[in-house]
Length: 412
Image 1: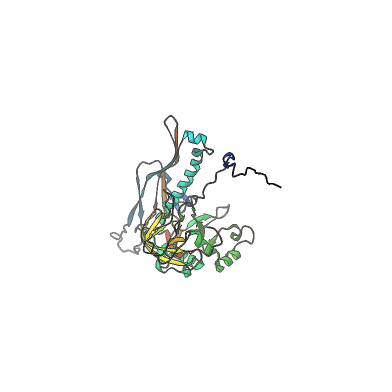
Image 2 (image 1 turned 60 degrees about the vertical axis):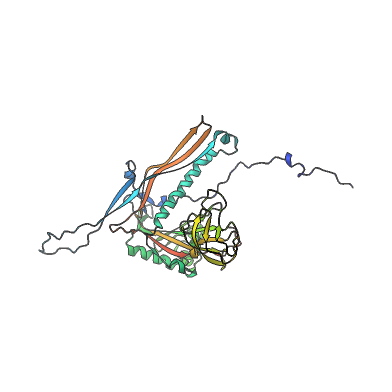
C-alpha cells in the first residue's frame, strides 16, 4: 500500500502555537537569618534593637562602655581617700545610612505581558534586602577584629572537618572570653536556659551530621519519636550551643556564603591557563564572597583531584591567577584555600542594630504613568558591641575544612 504524502508536525511548525505556563517560579533565595536573634535592650538577645533611637536624627550613633571595678577593697581603718577607682571607658560607633533598591517597568509591558512584573517585584525586593542585611552582619562577624580559632588556613585538612570536639572547643572558647549567654525561654512557664548560638555552612553541617559520636548522642538525648532532629532535619543543640545552618546555593549566580565562598568553572581550564572564568551573565557577582586575593582550591566533588592555585585579583566572574598545573572541566568547584569555612558562634549582646526607617515601600510614576517603579528603602545601621577595652567578647569564630563529599551522582 502506498503511504500517504502527509503534512508532518515539522511542516506545520509556523501554524502550531507555543504556550507559556502562567505560573512563574522564582529562583531560590535565602531568607533573613538574624531577625530571629533580635531583641530589645536587656532581653539578653544576640542582636540588640536600639528602638529608643528610631525617631532621632543623625547619621552616627555613639555608644559608651564602662569597665567593671577591679581594685582591692579598703579594709578596717585604712584611708579610703585617694584610693577611689576610675572607670575605664571606651566608645564605639554605629553608622546610619540609606539603603534602597528598585524595579521599574513600562505600563504597556506590565499590561501586555502574561506576568505582572510590578506585582512580582515587591516580594522579590523584600527577599533581596533580607539577604543583604544578613550579609552586612556576616561581614561584621567575620571581620579580622573578631578572634578566630582553629588550624591555619594553609594547613587545613580532613582532620579539621567539623566534629563534636570542635564544638566543645568553641563552647570553652566562648566561656573563656566571658561571652554573655543568650537567655532562651524553654517552656510556657517562662523558665529560661543559658545558651550560645552557632552558625554552620551546609557542608560543615553535613560533616557534623555524619559523625558517629554526634549521631549517637542526638539519638540518645532526645525522644525517640518524630520530634527527634533525626527525623526533622534540625541539628538541635550540642553542649549548650544551638546549631543553625545557613546555606546559599544560587545556580544562576554566586554559590556559597560569606562563611564558605564557592563558585564553579563555566569555561574549561587547560594547563597554563591564568584566568578562571566562573560566570557568564552580566551584572551578577559570581565571586562575591571570596577574598580580593589569596589561594583557591579547584576540586571535583568528593575526589582527591584538587589543585591549590594562587590568585592576585578577581573580577565579578573570574580570577587572575598563576598558571594552572592541570586541566579542569566545566562545573568543577572553586572554594577558598583548602575549602575553608568559618563557624560563627556568639552570645548575647553581640551586635546592636538601629532602624530610623524600616522597609518603606515607595512607588514612582513617570510620563503620565507610562513608566512605573517600586522601591524598598531602609535607613539603618549595625555594629559589633565592644567592651571597655575595645574587644569583641561575644563573637568567636573557628576555621574548619569543609570539602564536599562524593556527591557526583547528584546534580548540585
